[in-house]
Length: 338
Image (cartoon, rainbow, N blue to C red):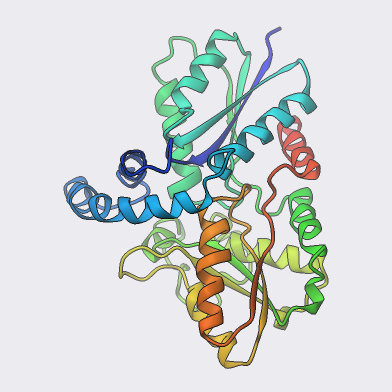
């Protein structure tokens, strides 16, 4: 029998922090119909005519701030995760890493699996909480690519792992060295999404954003809701660390444009906490399994500076899952459980 194929897919990163490579990355990323889910004509005008030309130079400067001898942190840690998982799973498995946007591509990873004569393919989008713009996009592209194969092997997907016990424990382990109980407030800052994307995922047609607390509890109605899964992840990490509900806040970062996104926004929460006299904040970013621009720079630098201007003293980022052995064990268990 052939090996079992395992495809890990993360979001992506430019090939370099130079403007030309950032431009290519942003163009591919933002032209995805699931990321900016408006009609193709309007999306093309917006992305190619406005966002990419004006945003690329600014984003290039940010990437240069986090780029080091290992390159992009996201790609660096993703490669380590794939290598550690391959070693842990052993010879019966063929593990490949791909990025949804840019390199290494999903297409090339699947072709290597085909050449390796794998007997099955399991796809794990490396996004703990399901969103159409992330996990859904990976699933769609994989299915489109495989649909052209004359022989399609058995294929399976991990839809989400927002409540994975070992993942929760890993985030908690990474936080313990900072003594969370000594901080004034704990923030769980997740990547944001437009509210319209939440509503599109509401198959009941009458639950999403109909009340201020509709995402607070995960139920059969909202089980695929990104925001509800985020709240559930935060609740589980807080429970693992015995953080009382009044001591932590859930918020959403990285808003793009002026339309409503999932709330509360991280910037607004920082202002509220500063007004309350909070001085020291410990911040988790549990929408990411590897440190990246949104964690290393947006939280540690931008939000850190913003909070200090508001009168705060410290914003401490909890490291992502990165190369923690317990996270690799979590991935291994996911693979073997399917």
